[in-house]
Length: 409
Ligand SMILES: *Cc1c(COP(=O)(O)O)cnc(C)c1O
Image (cartoon, rainbow, N blue to C red):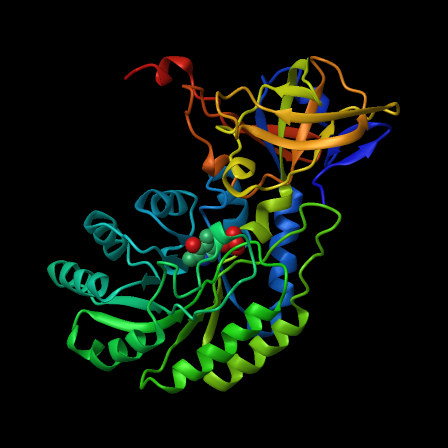
């Protein structure tokens, strides 16, 4: 579950003792393990090897250029949801022919950029968007390849704030709309409809919703008169964040995907984000103060919800461990909180936690996905440093934002 391992009581990532980094880099900072990122990508690919999928990493999970470059070297593509993400993916060296662009509200400028860069697919989420892409393509004298996103009305059995595939969610077209859209797509002369896509949500720990998608897709595809060269099955594969959550088993699903691919003779695309980077990162923080409350001790960290928002946004539970293992246990109730002036700026509660002190360092675990990308300048705090560890070395892949830059406007 965790990126690091305790060796002789000290937390290590790959071969590097994390406490060593705190001697030169100010907390809070993110660290990622290069090896873990590579392993996750390779494992994911191996699971679906028989369909030789194109894996388009969901850049919104982690858009650090250093991370993208690691994935690029493995042959990975990108799933982007903004012009900024598209430019970052290109800057990392990812081939435009491996980039898909999703999102319900693409702007004129973003569409123009995607068309000019000739990316693999723009995954369209409404008829109005298709009309606009057609218009801009015409202006550019380009035939643009598009996919169409289906809202399959499937419950992903995940946190309500990260469900995207129910009829009440804003994403994709309903089955009826999609089929009628396919019937008139020939009228849009500058578009070439080559793909159908789905993505029903995130942090899904059961394979059932995924299997259900295949069934819905089969039905819908049979109802259209289009040959879909690509079928984009999206992302959403969950990871365990605590010992109670079980790893999702996608073996059986992969067999069904193989059958599906054979039947429709299509290129399969996946868009995993969390599954590739989620468990490859930690946020290192210092205990600034300990404060006794009425019923618990507040452990006040120097990392806040602006650095790592998932607990505040999604009630996510991320384990926190001291960088140096302590053997003595305190029986008191404690709660890890951050410095931001919001009651939601808190991380996790424990009972029977190792004894900790002010100025100790801790690691918030499994923050590789939707960690740094969700960080903000709230409370006028700088964005934190990001580091990639490789064997016994580390490299800063994003410098902490300077206060000078922060106070400019
Ligand atoms: C966010 C997103 C993903 C990635 O989701 P994960 O849960 O991180 O795998 C994939 N596709 C689309 C369209 C997305 O919006």
